[in-house]
Length: 245
Figure 1: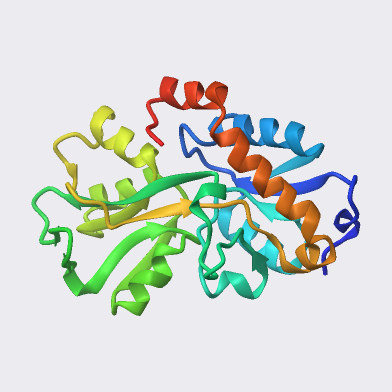
Figure 2 (figure 1 turned 90 degrees about the vertical axis):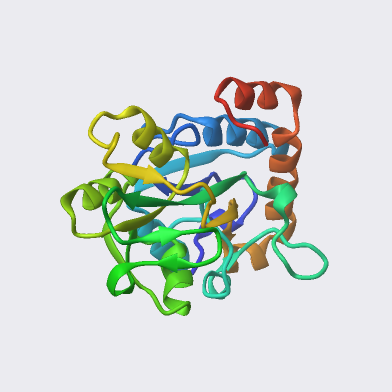
């Protein structure tokens, strides 16, 4: 059940991942997502309370209504059972009202037997290391793979490759790429495939019951997100962070 935050004027609690996803978010509630939401809150006349938790817990608490929304979630049929996303007229999620678009990339252990050519993923024993609670695990299961959710962060996934437990990891975000290119532990040990596994829009979904109690409030927030995302000030921040929207 969504709590009293369904009434306009009561601050909304937004859950976000408690590991770094630079430049979008960090555990201390800094990063581009929070810059964007601060501007959107001002436009919509809202107040947000932020709660850092493991990603799987964020999604579960959104389902339960313990939190009002989650920051940076991909749309899926499973999540729509308990979460409302900004939609287009055809029922698909609206990328213009998303927080940002991100790549889900393939990382290969040097000397391993995995490969990705942009179409076919070869993984020994069909096993792939992924971040815990991320939607790509469901995508891989549907395609016959065995995703192993043994770590929370991009660094966890890359360390699993170094350990030799896996030949391939599919990890979301710029943080994994940054580590592979800049961290001496992974250089010459792990390579990033040229083509991403998929590109996803990351949204600010709200608990379904909260949405149905006050759709105008939630829709106003999503419109404010879209407006703030296109503002020259915010686009300048993206450019400074090396993001091309």
